Image: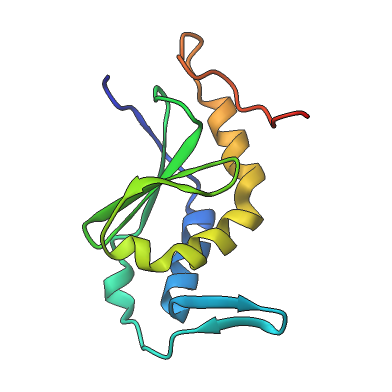
Length: 127
């Protein structure tokens, strides 16, 4: 299947870039988050990219590219579908970013789907 990448607004990409620049989140605690004490150079963040594809396989997901590595995450719960490399080290950052941007990801997914998309619109599971 041919991939057709859809642009994600820069402001939500910038939010995740800033999180990566602050350092890798090691764990979440009741007091906040514990960030790795390692300085990250700004120029290392130049390659961060978030993508949603307009003609893709299920489940609805987004891709994060960072420093030559990629990982795909489910829009519904931010679980990694696949991927490896440097980007995976920042999964807590991605999760925190996802929590505040899930609605935007859903809107982009739904607005950019072609009518013949095999996945269709994103819908929250009902119980």
